[in-house]
Image 1 (cartoon, rainbow, N blue to C red):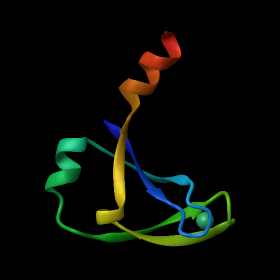
Image 2 (cartoon, helix red, strand yellow; image 1 turned 120 degrees about the vertical axis):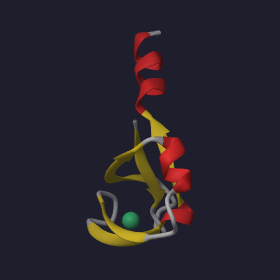
Image 3 (cartoon, rainbow, N blue to C red; image 1 turned 45 degrees about the horizontal axis):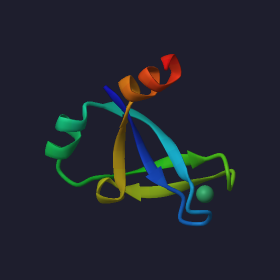
Image 4 (cartoon, rainbow, N blue to C red; image 1 turned 180 degrees about the vertical axis):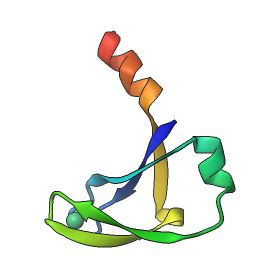
Length: 66
Ligand SMILES: [Zn+2]
């Protein structure tokens, strides 16, 4: 499982969409759009699956342990 991330159109910083999915499953998911709260702008941004990616939590844990 990984966190679905997208990019803030205002600041260009990555934001968490609050959704979690396997990277493989995410790639098979048909295009959709949703909204994510942006902590940088303090508003909701609409985002498209095409502009999002999956950040694997496993990788982060490995880095944290290193
Ligand atoms: Zn933003």
